[in-house]
Image (cartoon, rainbow, N blue to C red; front, top):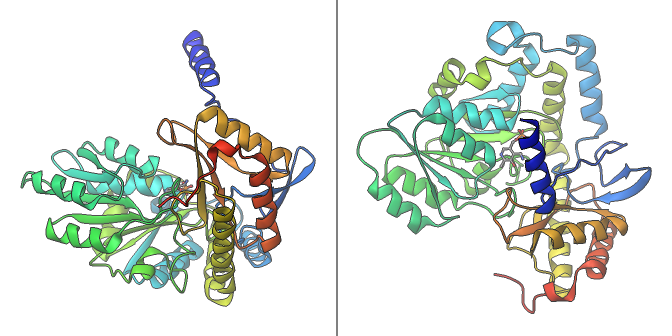
Length: 395
Ligand code: PMP
């Protein structure tokens, strides 16, 4: 065992894929201290800059005084508190669904939902670039599991046509793809799901709080109701600035998950104070809507600047703005060069992305200023080798 593990670790090193954790000495925000030095952070999913918002902090402190710290037990035993319940009601309201169900993490929400809905003899179709938790869920479910080409409706329809008549059908996509930043064509996917009698599930981890006029995410952006998009997953640890996740949908869906979703049933409820922070954040979605507007303005500013510098940006209009490098070692070198310039951006390498698709996953947040984005652009200009420049922006 020990030798085998050592061999695997050595291999990881040799492939430039070894992952290391940085230790942040301060709260999440546009500037953090790492190794005693202040750096600009461009790799957090705290898209609205809420993770250290005084109202979230106060809500959490107050709830900790009222409810204590620990969840105490699973939701079904005796861990479901009034604040969890209120948060579920608010999430249902915000997303325009009958009900919502809290999960401790997005990973568990995806694993729990797909495995509760699907089993042997059923059929799952997932976008190739779906999040690891959805891919793992598909494999674990015991259903027949296939992946279609990224955002390719023709490939998907070909596969749907070939499905046998027996078994349930679940079509699963990321609403915003976590490593590419592009958005799934949800209205077209909903139409295909209806045509071929499949249930549609969208993981809105990177859209909830950010997309749509009121921040309700992909369902608001595209105006998709519960019939068109029956299984909506959102996370609370990214745009919402807190922690946890939820599934929103019909009464029947939520009751089924309460009964059958094992990662819901067999785990301790999240601390009530965490739920209270999420509730406070949902209030800010409307009272501080300037955060979404500012974020959108920063994204445009970054894209314009990157185009002028001929940076190899991928086609994304969201806060996830990946820069395609290709080679794994080169992505690491560029990330280290940026860090030397005082800018933190993570290099994303296989197995998270395909071989030859290594990239810098730049994320912009509402906590940044135009001047911060200019510092990022100047650092990229200085560090990026000229061979990576493009003459025209990628499609
Ligand atoms: N889905 C997607 C698309 C994600 O990017 C992530 C987090 N990286 C998750 C699900 C998991 O969410 P959580 O971090 O709450 O477990």
